[in-house]
Length: 231
Image (cartoon, rainbow, N blue to C red; front, side):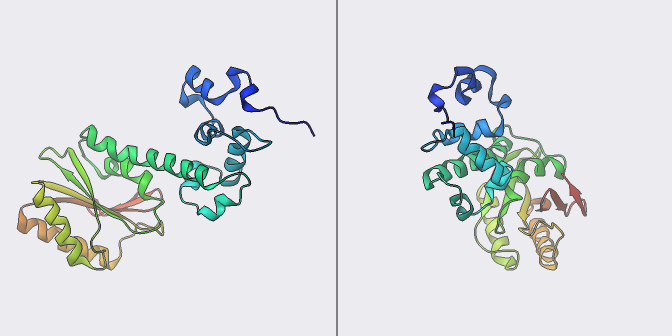
């Protein structure tokens, strides 16, 4: 069997890092991008070889993002350090969209505008997470807060926590977002009752609850529009 040539002996135009610098990261394949994250291969195989095995197994970065550590460990040559590098890089990419909403003070005019930034991170979560988007008087995003206390099934604790944070930050309007790990964004009875209580609380306190959005797998439900939509 022909011995594989180490990456350091490749021509510069063949090496992923040099190619990125020459033509830009958007022109690299998934395998090449992953090889850069891995930095090195193992005995007898290059970072490209290892990256190709990972891509062949999982198919996409999205699939890697929600797979278990045990599935990664099945790949020979892939240790904990490299698995952590992959997981961290993917999570950075998912968080960037939410950060962009805040940094650019995105003005929200429809549920679609919320979902396109929130969906990448929410759709693959294995547990239910609840976030509140803070908006200024022109419906521009000020901040996004994750609510840790309570769940939809415990409506009062989570509603208290939401309005506590809203009042603390002098926010005039909010949009609430949570996910359904099942992938189906259809509202449950608890979701419907929770939203009624939330809007009622907002009316009493003078806070505009503009929407409550439930994220599924490339689908979402908006209480403001009253329908499930695809993104």
